[in-house]
Length: 198
Image (tube, rainbow, N blue to C red):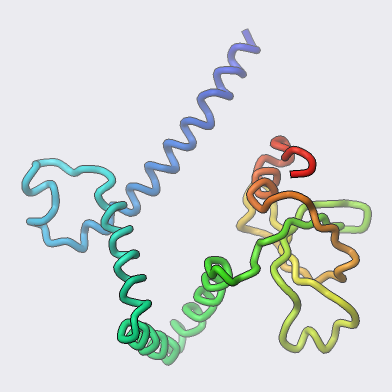
């Protein structure tokens, strides 16, 4: 009896959570339909809301923004927009921080989260998986003697929270593991172990 109950839970829990997350994403993106005039929305001519149209509208807006932002005049407009936002006191600090993070994470030339590492954390003799984010910069470099790397140590099961640390390169072990596999390993609290040598 207990075996069948656990098997049923193992089948249903991932499915229900996946559907719940998808519904949350679709519902959030459907809010973009509020940008349209009421007569353009499906409620006015079909009589009901069609879920998912906001996802399509959001993708179209993002794509068109990307197309505009890559030509000469669009790039000048984006630069002007950045300059305006950088002059607003409180907005400037928030916007510049978020922009630096998004540029690092989504830039094709960025090196953030490109390698999974094995590091001793939170003390010597205890090992965990971390991600290489780069090398120390700014005034920190002046105070660090030797070859150091910048490392992000995520928490489990929520990897969006974690610690940024600077470690000697010799104290890290580069893993033959993709970032995706390492994230699955962390989120699953070590239950979903990646195959060795991947």
